[in-house]
Length: 222
Image (cartoon, rainbow, N blue to C red; front, side, top):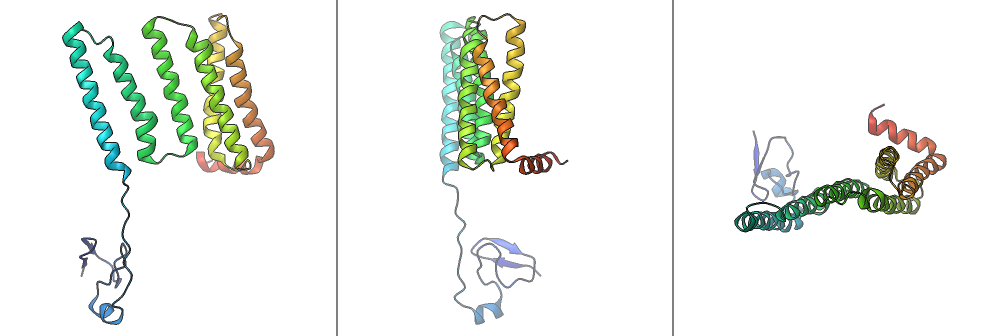
């Protein structure tokens, strides 16, 4: 026979005399013996309503921008910038806050979406070169240095920082190959980003090899 907790508004199907959520006594016998059982309130996340409001306002602003752009120019030329900014706001700021991302996850998300954003700017504005040769590699370099600092702060035991390091190493390696294939004038920023991120991975393995291997096996189910 199920019991009902009036405080949490849930049915309790087990034989426990107390509600597993708030600790309130829900049994008659228990209530006689222990009238002053402590009540624990579930703390709601106050950020969620604010995030929902920001998402709705952002969508409204995007819709208005598209409508104005179509009405004035019959195109979505400048409103496309607003759409991309909304995507960045959602994936780089709102979603990490909502999902409570770790710092390593935030760095990975920022690296990926900022790279996509700068590539979009280059392609859309037909100004190919500045992003691939300067902006993107310097962004990777800054994120790699930040990952290295956070790793040292945690005494080389925070394996979470391996994830953005691996991603930055992979991205910079692919970018270096493409830069060399297309004979770009400037190569050194991409090379520096690759060397820094790869060196951090090597150093982390040197200082915590066994721990790193165990973490890799755990993450990838090896």
